[in-house]
Image 1 (cartoon, rainbow, N blue to C red):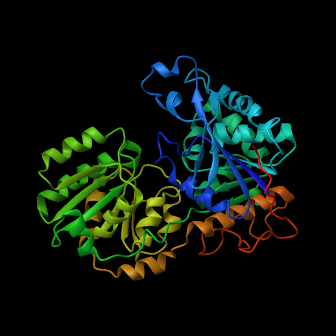
Image 2: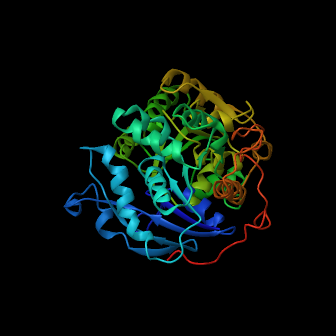
Image 3: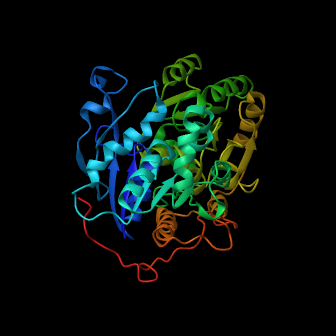
Length: 424
């Protein structure tokens, strides 16, 4: 099976840290089928002169990432003025990337509902191949609020052969936009279980120069308002006044990084801001902490949540998106409402003081890896190619296993043999 993945959320040589979940899942998928990636980059005349868009001028046209052949075609983009045009312009920009470049794919996957998924459906209809839309969170939770985009978003979703989501709540959002339940698959992300596993907390703290006697809460993610990082800082400032043995570390970068560093300067070492870190360093901070804090305003199913649990660390997180699907037990952590800083303060204190067995946390969470996730995605793509509905469960994951219907690990079923022909 030849799979063409189209997405604007994918790493490149300029931004290697972009969307690591897509990179890992697609690399794992390539073990089961022939995968090519169009990791698109928006372009409009004069973009190179604007500091907000430096990626457009410097990203390479082609590269290999984790063994995947990746092209970075530019797509014509109209910022702000007419967002409903961006889907058709995206599709038109991608058409030359497919015509006359070898055998057509068996399935086209748009990884983000709009404009990527919309474009994948347009291209699939033009070329006579099925299209699958993979949703992530804000493309279903936020984009439909824009009346200009709700209609084209729904058009693409309802015409996709299948829609893949990362949580039950996201699947509900897709169904509310008109997609039949039997065309929706829940495929959660995986974890690099070799990197994220329970480790000795004292050793991890020593490696980071942190006191073994203090309590440490860690946040990992983009430092922006939607992730609730400013709520977290205010809640921690309240907590720190009464509990001098509790510290906070913010691992990541983003629009509010300067505000976070200003808060760190006020707090005299109680608050650490690391900036962006590679995955091995993230795993060290998770190994050193007593709990992960994730006070997001909205989410899909954040991968750091899975990584923290695989590391044997409990979590304080808001009850949004797919987070409740993962925190199925009070042993794994505490769910709180978004935006309530008082409740967050109290939950952080309980998390910092809790005594628990990290190995038990990792075992209870399940520690499913990227291969599990890729096999479930592969099964969904096979259904799209065969035109099959998902029988009995109506496209929903109904048990504790978060990867939906089981996938065969040994090759392709029903004669769907692997094709190694290139999409170049």
